[in-house]
Image 1 (cartoon, rainbow, N blue to C red):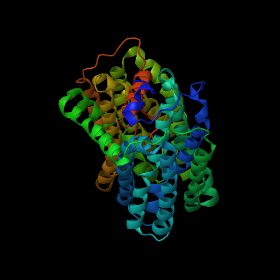
Image 2: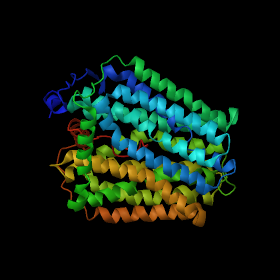
Image 3: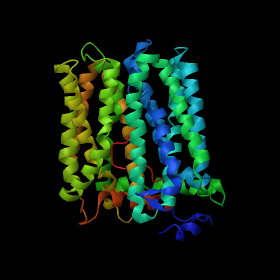
Image 4: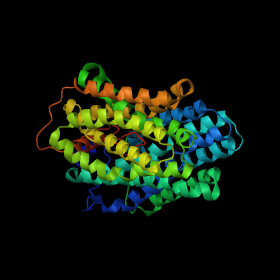
Length: 460
């Protein structure tokens, strides 16, 4: 279904023509891509040190983990809904709401919660802030889909995930390693406001393009209709055993990615780990720096050796080993940057091998690709919630070692589960092209074609 033919199904709203493409990027949305990098830098600045800071001002590791758990739950809900909201009310408006919501909640989180040492308010406002970034990011994702020809969509989507990684992963990890020694933890947290505000203003004023208009028909009725369509994707879990197994593996594949920020800053900067906070932040930054390259590499390799085979051995078995190495190598040689960087590189190399995940879901349900994408989104959201939740539950009783062993065991279980997924991989078809076309269909059929996750590492 192309953009023009789909106009009638959207209450008569016309969908504008696709933008000219240079190097795979829609030219008219260039400043939107830059805005994503700025916004996600502000959103990710605290990820690698928040648990350390929260415990440093008197709260427990379990309470720090609870912050991430609640944030993951709200981000998952917002990620699932944001594509629908962008289609009903227009992406520019939803991106503006995502910016203002983030700023208001962050100010309340710092001034009302952190500065007053009030954990209840910290939990409430940090959790509420989790709704914000998906509104901004996935509304822009919807905008990209509406402006890009289907045959160039993989490149356009690749660009936006690169901007996500540059902001959320690279800049947001390295920047605090310099600002914390210079100005401290709390000013660094306040600094993130400037990045988000700049990203929001750039998106709102610099994109010289008429965003896809809100649906002409009654917005409430359209929203209810699209939510009904999204919920139908859940029936696939019941009626398609392969989709159900893929959902479980989708949850497992990102557990360490979302769970490690709860416990690893505490371990690495302890006497047992032997690193300073700036050193830890640089180690964590290196983990993201290589991912743009490993994502491309694994996309090529998976198309040649098989998506499931790659995910089974490089992904689940590899991540199980890398998860253990990320703890046990620094534990064996505390303060050794070479060992820690090796562990981070191994972790990055293995976790990015899950790139084909975005193609597997639509291939398992070729007659219901939009619903399959919706199930994949659900899996990403559950991983965003389950990783911190599991770390929070285990860290008090079993410490960081217990969290790491549990994550590794689940990765090895995921490798076993892939043996029961029945997938016929088409020859001559690239995983990114399958994933991108399925997302485009999901958006244009009125489903949310986004990917949760505050993660720039995995399958889109």
